[in-house]
Length: 499
Image 1 (spheres, one colour):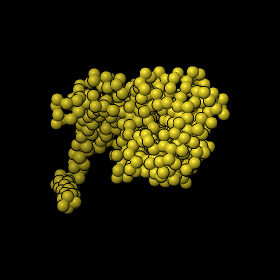
Image 2 (tube, rainbow, N blue to C red):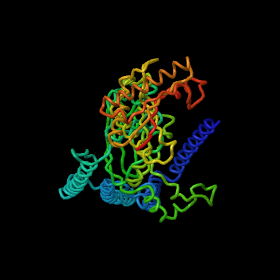
Image 3 (tube, rainbow, N blue to C red):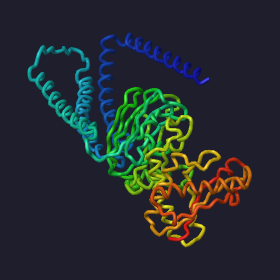
């Protein structure tokens, strides 16, 4: 229906224009051709003057009215270190082109009036004017030189990559329909390698998990958090179509091109809270964020930096918006500590894990740290229940008291603890589930406890400080009703007897 109405409107306008043309022809015939021409020229000249004034006035008023929204003056000054260079280049360009625009606009319509057709006037032809040629060649050349030099300076400043040895952090932004996948480095500060042929439903970025740098990488699934005052290098890629990584408040804009990685380096200089405080100085940002809730939060209170895709990448283009939070360094440090490794939470131990069945170096370090912290708490505790700790990462061959090779990592942690606390005396206890003969379970648990003690004594720990004991299935920590609960009951523990 809407299409039909539009079509009818177009047809009606066409008919009106045709009729106006016919009326003009009839008027010219009645008045006489020369008189009609003089009349037409007069009105064209007068209307040109009117357009000159009205249009120029409208341009100036609208530019002033929308300068804070469209031209990013006022509250929306750059929130990045390099943004001032771009804003300055924009201002200089606007100054020169503004002068040319105003003068050209005035001259164009003034000439349309001044040189309108009048009876008896003849055109004057000038074949050449050296002074005029010099003016319109030299002045544009000088202005263009200024703009180009400033532009090159801005480009070299903004597009400079990080230098060797420079303090910075690196993240990765991958565009896809319709989302940004943001990857952070873990504690090692390095992003791991990628291979697009490894992309699967579980491994959406094609991370090569044989690369140790990938093991602690973090994939942020919500907002982007960055520390203020820290130089950030963003690797920018795309998985499907052309996207654009746009952070307008930081004057950052770079295409994300499939198969051609790009980058951008910038330093945020205003936290989200600081930017909000600047916005609150402007009346328009003290209006309700929700017009339907006049008592609710103001616009400045709801402001967020944002990442947008500045390419029309498909129907869901709008959904690529991501909130960006700029926070103090200590707040960022607290946030990043709460984030979990994508590899450890989504890949480790599953079919996609190329390291399945292996104990990795960083896991050994994490286990050692956790064991040391738990041991310290147990030694210092006065609560008897907190004096017992489970050896979580030791295993035995099925139905046997033989320790698996990977158990040495956990037992070495216990050796280190016994060395650090030379007066420590512990009981090593073996436990089983209730499957099988109770007497056999008791024997097996005793043998397993003895295996642990033998490992410790072979590492130089005095046998007098170690008391092996098997409890069989007599001390379960869960009901023996499921495989999961029975696995909890099959455990090896140690209890601090004295320290």
